[in-house]
Length: 304
Image 1: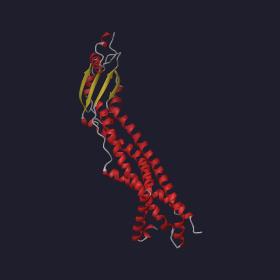
Image 2: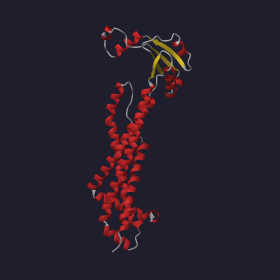
Image 3: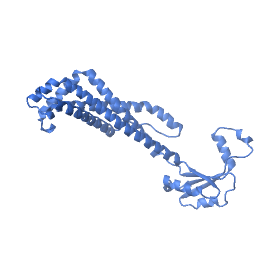
Image 4: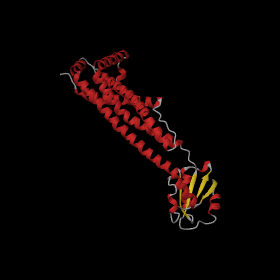
């Protein structure tokens, strides 16, 4: 087992592995860059997902429901007072059809283009404001369903609905990020495994000699485990740098897009703990790839 190897031999083996990696700088650099790119893709995707979740959580719902009346009929005379009597309602304002038409003309910048209409196609409506403690999505959805069944009411809509759809899209994006992380994590294991396989093949004679003088498979595997772990660490460190660079490159475009929608969002890169988790995951994947490859190929080598 690895813990049965004396500490001074661990130091010697680690120094030898570092020397070998430094002796092939181009191959080491290419391997580390490929590993970094593979780990940076899911890391960037999950970082962007985290930023979008912050945007959704920070959205302050206005707590208003728009109760649209049936366009072809007259609303019940007591509808306004009935809405005011509901639990949690703090304000009810009536929007006549003409006011709705003027507002639509203003928002769409149509000017006087709607004045020639034979009739007003827009219905009247009530804008209902809820108390802060009544603005949960579940509560607003329940009120919308209840009021939508009242006589004279065509439909009820509230601003929180787009946030729920947005969160559902974020959930899908987050799941895609986790799947991508799993797939590319497997790719990292395969890349390191292939690198270790080639290293074992290049040191075939040395391994046979070590086994001939009594070296165990666990002892022979140790340098390759160090090599895989170091490559995983370096690749994950490169992934952190690439993720930070990608977030910085996207920040300006995201800020401009968020501003157009009246939101304030600046992208935040991975935190120190998130970067540590990524580096740790790279080390584990490197160790796993080396363990699988070295375990199989070292075991197959026996002194002739």
